[in-house]
Image (tube, rainbow over all chains, first blue to last red; front, side, top):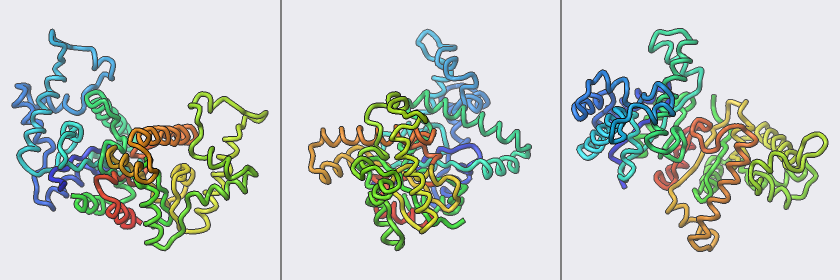
Length: 194
Length: 194
């Protein structure tokens, strides 16, 4: 089956988003990253700012509190409602056009399609740290903390909603260490697999 | 740094061994798989048959029994002694020549070198099952059992000796789903990354 859609999951600082954007440009297909937030907001009736804070990166509080706090009478938390909108938006995007989708558990949400190439991008600590210090203009210590926090929240969100393990090779078609392989070659490998 | 050595970890039935052997042939470099058993036997003074049963695939008994049973006065089990010989043999091979090494925690044993490309090959259940039923001439049910048993033993051995998680993307330079990518393209990607 030819692949039409690329999902990119990534460690913070690995350049996964950059690689995904370049691949979309080179293949001439749509690119979805923050664009999805606006669509989830529209679906759910919540503000884009709230979605930005809560989609993909929730919870801030740890898995236990996450699983049991703030449920309404149907057992649904606001996070769950955001997540339901996220599923709907991603399924519609995949139906509509060839594209690259960054994060947001899209690999799992689209698991019943067979035209999806699921990619996980990770990297080595020195290269990721250097990238973050440059991109966000922060000290090394702060960069290390940003990485740990962001990846922990991505992992918790993924593990909670998918019942799979974030970063486990068998969830993805292709996992690439961008520090060792290089961004250009990562792009080439992804495009070769389409 | 140019890569000289390829380690291949793999799910049972994913074709990882076959892919590794093809890559070694095409690159004209040495290939180590069962060859290592003879060398470990020589190092440790134990029989090749014993090594075959115990290296990589130990324990049969589960991690807890594995960790605490059969230790001698120095706290070493026979499994530990086999593993020490395995480390010595793999370090010597890597020093000696460019090569492909299948399994045996070689990715972790060679972690201090920067000329190693670590690959993990996995696959989808239907394709792996089909491959095993053909290769071993067994029924589907038996193939599924063989997969579960072998991968569980590989995982337990790896997790015990490396304190890393077998099959976690970040341990490897490259992880490939051979069912979706195809064996030929897997070989090409690995060779492109050398």
